[in-house]
Image (cartoon, rainbow, N blue to C red; front, side):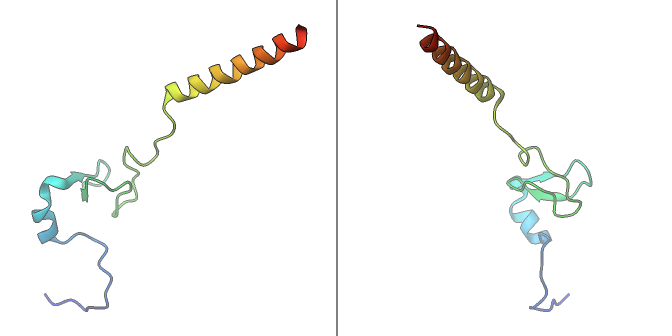
Length: 80
């Protein structure tokens, strides 16, 4: 099957999937074969687990503790 060279090819070819088969995962929503470093499925748009990672919970707690200690320091310096 010949393809038009100007046609955009946004999907992995069967030969790519075979060549890089160990570097692929399956989309949990639609079952499409995806490269393991993608964040969003090309077929259905499902965000994979690495797509929406936010700050780690311990980072938030450390930031809260630092702000609290700073506020206590300001309060202590204002009292003395």
